[in-house]
Image (cartoon, rainbow, N blue to C red; front, side, top):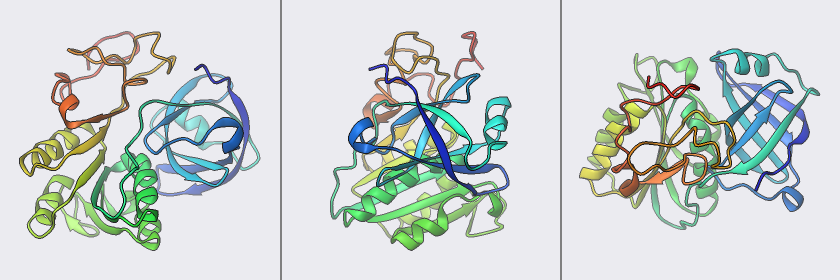
Length: 266
């Protein structure tokens, strides 16, 4: 489904960290459909279009959380409340949010906390016991820790430099939690090198999980092939961005490389 762009007005902008802003806008769920956590939308700034994870799904309201890392995201960060953007979607294979009254671990690194916030928030509301590892390089870059705690999640902050919470990587924090806790399922999003470490730990612990991947996308419809991964040829925009353990293990490029707009590995 192409899903023609809808022009929406930004109703609220939240400065989450020195590099990340959350943009909220109205979304008619009855007319446009209710996205599932883990799905993404294509954001149009009237010049270019880029995929963005949905970080919050509320009653007739969506939000995206954007890290300022380049020209497109810098242009978004320059917008103000009342400005407009184009939204196309939602797209992709999202997280499984059908769990109830289960023990869940959700792990996010950096801006990878955006889709993790959406799934963790949803599962807390369904009476699941949800532990969240929110990982960042330093305290100022931690994302959604406070709001998830207020919602009822058990948040374990983790910083590389030890400026707040657990000192070390998300993998180290997970190992510590597994000494005293067990989980029925896990959800993971962040840098792939982090996700590979998490994948190995969860596989050893025999904990099933879903992982949200990121690749360069153009169409979001599975037509252009730009976001295909090696080996199985899965399209991140259609078969992904969320994959379960068994499929992740078949993606040979996972945590090794990805491709730029021209198709070159990097």
